[in-house]
Amino acid sequence: MGHLPHAVLRAGRPPSLRSTDPDTPWDDTMQDRKPVQSWLTDMDGVLVHEGQPVPGAPEFVKRLRASGKPFLVLTNNSIYTPRDLQARLVRMGLDVPEEAIWSSALATAQFLADQRPGGTAYVIGEAGLTTALHAVGYVLTDFAPDYVVLGETRTYSFEAITKAVRLINDGARFICTNPDVTGPSVEGALPAAGSVAAMISKATGVEPYFVGKPNPMMMRSALNTIEAHSESTAMIGDRMDTDILCGLEAGLETILVLTGISTRVEAERYPYRPSRIVDSVADLIDEI
Image 1 (cartoon, rainbow, N blue to C red):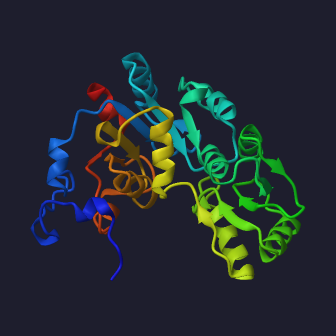
Image 2: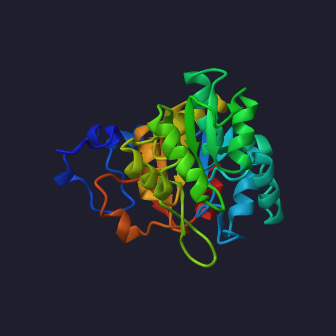
């Protein structure tokens, strides 16, 4: 039998007796949670969608900043540095400080620095990932690296993938920033790091360690960054399989918004549920 997330196992009633109302939490203890003092929110599908701000998102961010409560904007996308992402958000009217952005690239760099300080890595990725690794003292090399680190990139090179396969076969450990198999674009879905990781795994027989969502490590590293506690933190996301699952397993209150990937009907098909479902972050402004 498959393992259910810990948050599901803690629920107060057996599944057959829980409410079928999608706005009613499964876990009775959610009603006794501490007031939200810190906020984590996904970016794509929550604050922005297809290059445009979600209605109410600028006001939501403004209220967050005015409240003085710690918050982070999370993204599994490892392409951009926090400074790059800040500039993109500002152009869309979202005034998010650089230090309030937490990416899978930053989480990956922190993880590697904890695991093997001052190590070496062969990287397939963009500036967001390479900059984060340099910042923690990693040397990027294709000569007997400690790790092969795969992230998102605009152009996956067959030559680079071949090099990664050979290095892993020679003993390099395989890390991937995030498991997303596709990413959004205005033209449609794009293959993402998870798809390329599957190809490398097929060629090597080695599965990567994924650092980004839904690995709760991504959430815990974010909590540590803002010195927040899971019992008084809420996670807002648009994807059941990453944002909500990650938040549940990290012990956070979870809020699904319907401005991105997952719909209310799709949410019902999962064996776990968010604490609640709202139409958008505009519905949360008065709670901050």
